[in-house]
Length: 152
Image 1 (cartoon, rainbow, N blue to C red):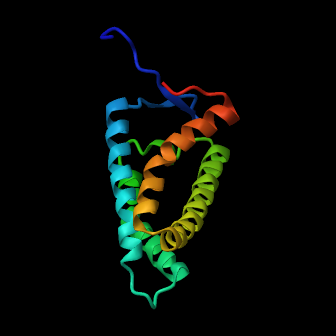
Image 2: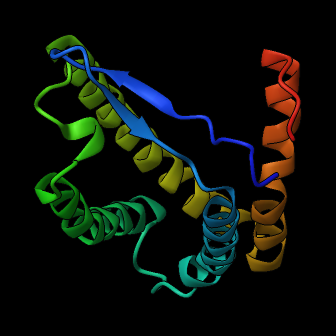
């Protein structure tokens, strides 16, 4: 294994150089577990909200809070010497497509937050926490069915 080289993901740029990204499996697994832990807490937080606050309002405030918390990391990435997908040397069409995909992803997460909050309210805290923890398995099955991709 020591001689095995990591596969780099290359992003085309204007100056015929490539931006290299070497994924780290251990960090990916660690961040996945942290994410699952935080998602497991979400039903508890959601069902602890004041009764006067509707699911839609709570989802709006939660999404706004997520945006505020993510902005410092976003601006930090922009100021790094090698900002990855935010580099000015990336072909403009690819940069534009990247920002459009980021915007669409943000909208999808905002909508899914509302559905999460509403589902937590309907299903209850325990059922919602169990369902949230099993969704990676559902994702693996759907990835195999739709894309014929096997997980490793």
